[in-house]
Length: 191
Image 1: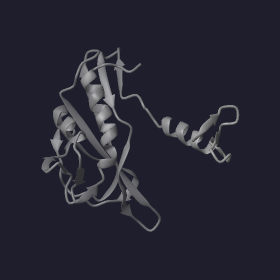
Image 2 (image 1 turned 90 degrees about the vertical axis):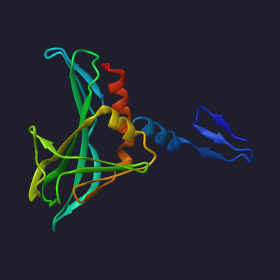
Image 3 (image 1 turned 135 degrees about the horizontal axis):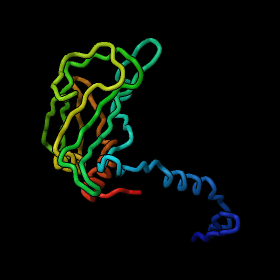
């Protein structure tokens, strides 16, 4: 039987041994204080709702050179006119950290989830670009998809993908994508 002694943050066991809970409390507080970056905001000057996730690492060590390894990151974004609006489409933007040598077979995003597979071509500045990438800095690809597709993907029980021939770990992004889709569906600012 455990009893909590609030004055000293200790647990008294039935054998009389005190166990300090400071480490546990710090762990719980730190776990609850994980980043909860605002997903939606309203820009009154342009009368636009803007939705975006934080930057999510989806491939670690995607490029390796003598001095370093670079990660591929992803950020989901969407926008629409009017306060509380719901965007029809979302963008997934893939970038590489720093300047690195990264060669992709192409810039097509392929996602496999729950026995299904979907593919989206890279859209950048309104045109399709799927050429190989040599020395790269910043944005690798931007794909646009219906918000309903992202909803289905984010709720999948298993999730894998690739950008060109580079495998992506998307399972770790599911929670943030679910929050993003939820914010879009609610269509409200989280001020």
